Length: 307
Image 1: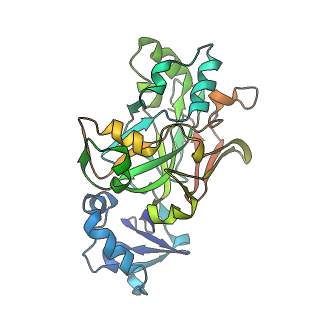
Image 2: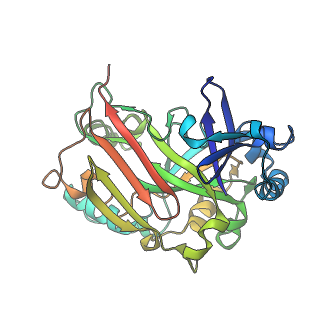
């Protein structure tokens, strides 16, 4: 299933799922049994998902149906409980470090590393992204995110799939000039990542990705285009650390909660920093960035100037 959060013409925000060119309101469809927010759905996904799977095969009443063209899709999870972003594609790490004249460090191969992003700055499909006022080097990052659907701690990698509810596209926007300055302090990217993270356009349940499964990974083509020109091309199968390994690391001596978002990090070639300005300049107001991943749809955002 493809779960969405959407806004109706009257301004009401609802949760539901896609059915072709229609959106089904889960609360109305279930006569109030299912909640009207995705975070509440995820809090009890083991109870609610089987009901949603049954309901999707029934013809809905008219008041539960909205034409997709008449609603606005938001981030499928507008207020995640947390956002962790990993650094799991070797090609990206090697190339980005080489651009700064740095060798790979052996510690990267010992544990999957992550940082916490700002869960209050989530952006949905076709929503504008404001370039920070002090930023001149704005960049996109082509990533996949998984969303946790079950509470757990000290989860082993080979058990982690049971805790994943689904997947979506993620764009970890980066203010590279701000980031370059602050990482010298040695405390992570912080302000360079504090302003926006896009996710969407919908949250895809694991069963929909089974045709692309290859062992503990998925073969999913990943592309990024700016103003219609494809700049980045990669495949999720090339990831060095699996989501299972990332979840094991994240849950070590910590509790993962339903609604936690875990980003993969940038696929190889998946940002301007890696491609360099010889391929494309930094992003400017008016640019449109489109990320597309097999099975997960298209996530598009336009850049606006800051204050």
